[in-house]
Length: 205
Image (cartoon, rainbow, N blue to C red; front, top):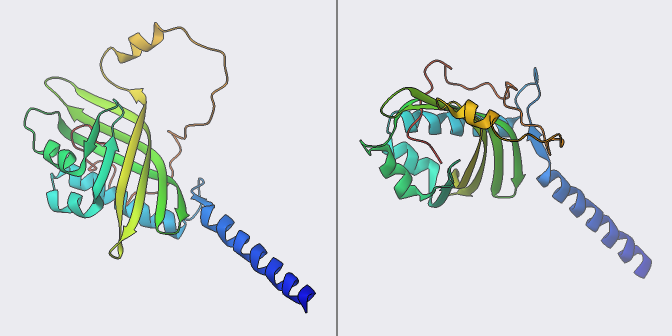
């Protein structure tokens, strides 16, 4: 009897371990691959985010961002949800031109989702249009039957600011291998928005 109980206990532990492994498995997009349900879901949220920023849609942003949201921009600026929304209406801030966010992978941990992808944002500030491309990580929490972003961080990889390329070339280069591949030119998830009309806001967090 004791041996039977031990076997049952071991089976339960094994199944529980498999469940945890599945929960942590990343759902990612490969070229030509159909979108996994999780990627399709969060791509829709990222599209709504881009449209809300460009259209200065306060209500949409309040729905997408958690009250405890904290965003870290590519320049290291930290903002709350209220600061992020207020920044959209700052007439002295850079004006949005376009924004595109593509989801590359989604990792689910119960009611928490870690979404990684690439972004391409353009805005105008007293002169030529500035373009920035990079990677983002958005952490979502499932609250009140919907997903809300609680944390966001961006890392710029390509800075289209006039003169930025010259500054980068002047820096010493290293032969060390890159720690990971940045899929900037990987098409990733197909956005529901037309690429020509996706707009952004002031530098988003």
